[in-house]
Amino acid sequence: MAVRFDVITLFPELFAPFQTVGVTRRAFETRAVDVRLWPLRDHAEGVYRRVDDRPFGGGPGMVMLVEPLVRCLSAIRASQQADGAERLPVVLFSPAGKPLTQQRVEALAASPGAVLLCGRYEGIDQRFIDTFVDEEISLGDYVLSGGELPALTLMDAVARLQPGVLHDAASHQQDSFSDGLLDCPHYSRPEVLALPVREGGEPAEQPVPPVLLSGHHAHIARWRREQQLAITARRRPELIEAARARGELSKKDEDFLRGLTL
Ligand code: 4GO
Image 1 (cartoon, rainbow, N blue to C red):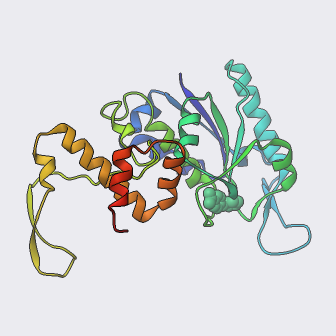
Image 2 (cartoon, rainbow, N blue to C red; image 1 turned 180 degrees about the vertical axis):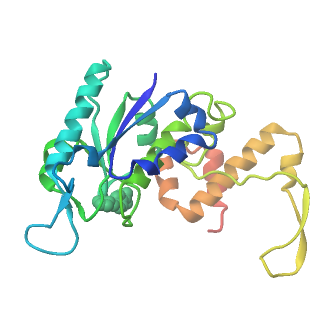
Image 3 (cartoon, rainbow, N blue to C red; image 1 turned 90 degrees about the horizontal axis):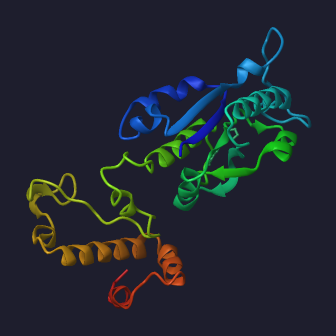
């Protein structure tokens, strides 16, 4: 089933190029991920087509006006109804939102979709948020000039989960986070490289980890699991704790972790 995203934005031109490149292109071209752009300016009134105004109470920057947003959302609802689609939930990208996770991405990829609201300026009049927004999502603890990059990020993460986008179904089961751990390192040709260990240093022979050339699939799988455990324990120990709490660490995993020097 297709996933539909109705995107409210002042900058629709930011979206087109992303839909024409890379492994996700097919997902967008076949409309497996069906992106509908709604330029907010089209719903503004008057000679100046205003979509923003000064904040009550003073302060820097501008606030997005409720009325163009209401008209735009009404047009989206009419379109969803005309297409026999569901009334999709409204998602706002904001540093005050809940952090986006692979789990939320997977749920959205298996859902009918969402209305993605991309803010600009200082933000959106709170009354629109209170009345219409179902969920606020954050990409992380930093501030962007608009919600367009978060919307593109979310749609990319959803698009790469569509059947046929990655080489095989196992491909994204090996990603970071799909099992709650960080990904293992990857190696390709040549088998041995003459590169300094750190840029600017003396060249040294850097072979691929020998187990990867052994052809022993069980040993390779175990080595990759241990690499995942080691990297995750060092960089994101809270993810190890969470995996343990879900009962996803075997006796072998625990033995390996106990022998690790962090
Ligand atoms: C989302 C939106 C950061 C995020 C944003 C984030 N900055 N961390 N900026 O996901 C309202 C106007 C918010 C610009 C928007």
